Image 1 (cartoon, rainbow, N blue to C red):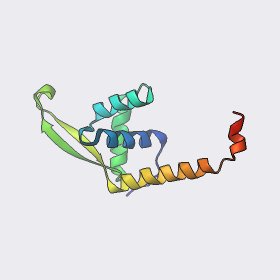
Image 2: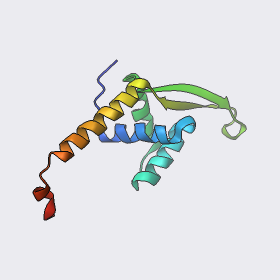
Image 3: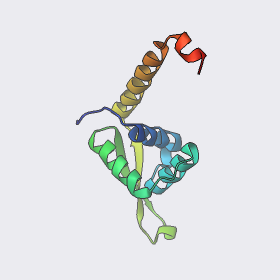
Image 4: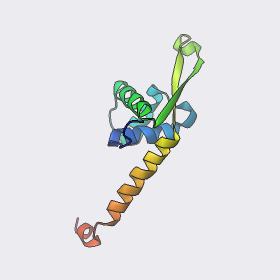
Length: 110
C-alpha cells in the first residue's frame, strides 16, 4: 500500500464516499462534494482522487449494474476500505489534538 497521508481534497472525497455509502460513483461524488463544500468541483478532479485513493488502498470499487439511462454502461461504485477508515480516524485525531493545543487566549480576540 502506498502512503496513506491525506490531502484536504482526498479527505473530502473519502468523507463523501462514506456519506453516499452504496451510491458513490464519480458524478454523484462530484455533486455531493459541490453541495457540501459550496465549491465548484470538476468530475475529472474526482476521478483523479478516487483512483489515487484506490491505489493507496483507502477505497475499493466494483462495477454496478448496467442501466438503460447510461446506455447499458455500468457505474464504478466506490466504498471506503478498512485502511480508509483508519486514515480518516487518524487525520481527525491529529487535527483535534493540534486544535486542542492552541491556547484559548490565542483564539479569544479573533
